[in-house]
Image (cartoon, rainbow, N blue to C red; front, side, top):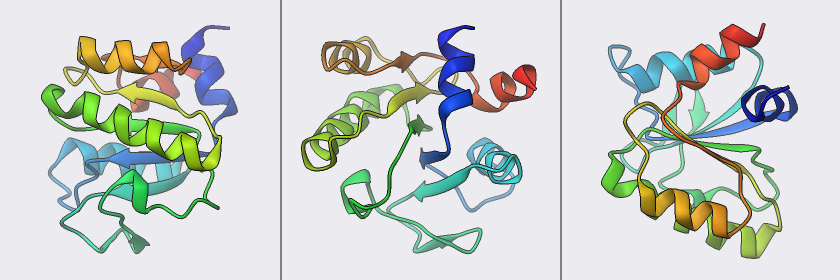
Length: 137
């Protein structure tokens, strides 16, 4: 097994940072796919209160600590990827959970990867979670 398949096989809950309510956006299509594939999806979008009938949170810090997150899937520009990792690290202090950081194609940054790996987090760079999940079926 690889880190990709192991991460997906053990995941139940995925926070999608940058989940758009717009069906023409890639983040919507992939978020919807993950829901249909049976994952619990936590939308993270500061501009929306609900997406696909689910509560959307403005950031990871706003997700209740009782909600366990296995993967933080990042759909933000590369310049914001490190901020998402910092947000994840702050959440770890409160919850103790250590979710994998999964950056979609073209979203990774060296700073984000360095922060995540130094904290002992799995960091998957520039991979489409939908493609990898479909491949592993």
